Image (tube, rainbow over all chains, first blue to last red; front, side):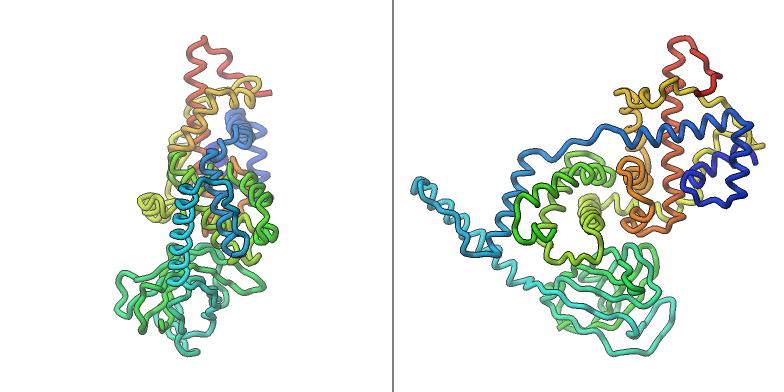
Length: 227
Length: 206
């Protein structure tokens, strides 16, 4: 084994993915080669040092406070009777706060009305694949999704791998999708599923193709009706 | 997480404490500067607050949190996500240590010694700056892999899951990243030792 070949396997060696004969080959080389030994030792020292680099700074107090306010606001909205007392605040300030709170609630309610979010599970197993690697497979009819949906779990066909997936709603002539999302697929009891936040509120009702693909791979298409 | 769903502010605060530094580091690996990274982390937590009821224990909380962070970071730097896509094809062809060797595979130069207490020297303020610079100059995928694996101590499985890459790909990216950082540190020590008249450039480490 040459020095170049030994160094090229440094990471595989550390990650313990080499066969025992390859490991023996590397160790035999290291025993006789001072330069490669130095390289491996440096690699090890560097990895240890990188694990002990000074911690990055925390969020600024201002950002932190904004987060806590957002959290409180969210909580108080889910339990509407927990209103903060406004006693003791000057009348003018009280009016301002009331207006702001009123506006904020009005705006939040608007947002909720538009997205009216709820969660559905769309089973893509055994559905017809129109295009894609596996050719045409007959299956159940098209998928139907409501425009109000913003959170969909897709159960992927058997054998789909975990990882990042792209989901997109295409018009039947393809082109730029009017809605798309990225999500990480999880394998649970032989079933691969992705949970995607898909905004269909701006997709007009009609027939579409639902495209699903692992990052960097080709699309698989499923017939889709948006209501 | 269940406490937070029930509205426990202290639990939420504790959760932010636990993850904010890691998140800032990973966000920085995606978007470059720390101001933008802080905004990405803030947006991530806002999305968490909003979407907490959607979290279903199907994945670990950490995976869920960092997948939101990743999405926020990609949104923030669209050009970087383009960079991500371009890079994904050409990863395996890069030869990081090639120039260190001659045609027969022998070392072209003597790797410099890093000193008798290399670890403490590596963690000296100046060297730390060089390590950060070396990481910052990596292509984005390599930067993310080395940040997660070596700075944050994630397992290779966790990194593959978050990035949606294969184990082999993860190892290739890690190898390239480590190789480049190590070469930069080598150069740094070589240069530094040139100044005070070569204290044993051939010596072996203890």
